Image (tube, rainbow, N blue to C red; front, side):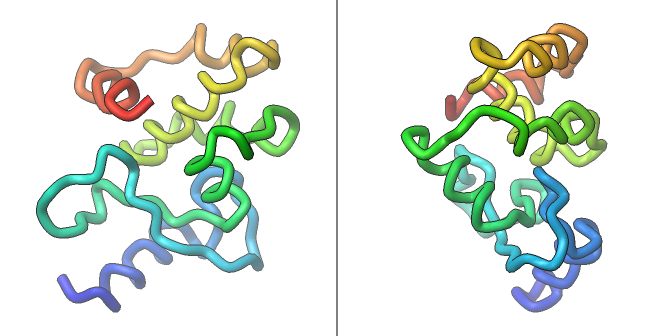
Length: 122
C-alpha cells in the first residue's frame, strides 16, 4: 500500500474527523497506536487524530481530563480496534477524576487481544 493511498484510506475511514474527539475542520495526522510494530506501518495500528488529541495522548503531563473527552463514551464502542484501544487508555487516565469515564469503563467489555493491547503501552 502506498503512503498516499494509506492516508486516503484513513481519511475515508475517519470521514475527515478526528477519530477520538470527532473534531472536524481541523488538521489531522496519522497516529500509530503504541506499541508500534517493528514492521511497516499498518492501517490496523493507526488512527487519524487532531493535534489536541495527539498532544494529550503522547504526553501524560499535558493530558487534561474533562469535557473534551466526554465523546470517548461513544468512541470506545468503535468497531475499529486502534480507536477502541486509544479511547480505553484515555478513559482510564481520567477514571479517578471523572465519574462518566469510570461508568463507561465499568460497562465496557474488550476481548482478550484488545485488553492486552490496551495495557501494553500504558
